[in-house]
Length: 275
Image (cartoon, rainbow, N blue to C red):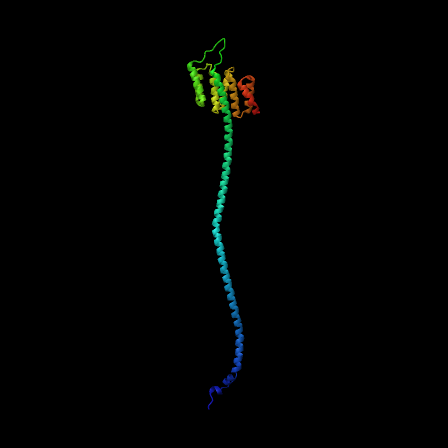
């Protein structure tokens, strides 16, 4: 039987004889070579799993951060609103404090004005009542030389001015009594007319003019019953002008000059309050 080329070829025959051992060796080498690759494959899987876990954790952290930022963003406008409300309330409180301080000052001024007005009005009406009662009975004329009494026109002009005083029309009273004195400068009612001019100016709070008008009564008719009252009115005007030293001096001069007058009695009660 003829041999084949494979059978006759030494290399083939050697290869055939080595096939089993070579295969075993090659298998071993392959196994040894595959083991690191398989181990590397396992490590890659672990790394992939770890990466996936980290990415999952990062995504979860990102979602939590977004949630917190969302809540913070929702709270931020509310915090801004509350802060603005607090600032507005503080501004309102400061404004109210300023209003209260301003009102307190106004109240103090009004209380002081009310006290002064009450005192002036009380003195004015007490004086007015006493003067009216005295006017109802004219002073007795001197026995030696009786002056001529006021005529009807003169009396009406005087009473017109007096009615204006009673009606609290002080400006009109000043004008009426001024016209009376111009028309009847020598009238027996002239001292009273001049006194009521000063008293009306006092009621109008023109204290300097009131002092000048009443001083004219004292200087021109020092013996007239109106002179002590004129001095008392001067002292009242000086008090309202804060000239307490002048008011004390006027009241002391009134007491010394007209000690028995009603005006002097009033001055004695007022003097201690001016010390």
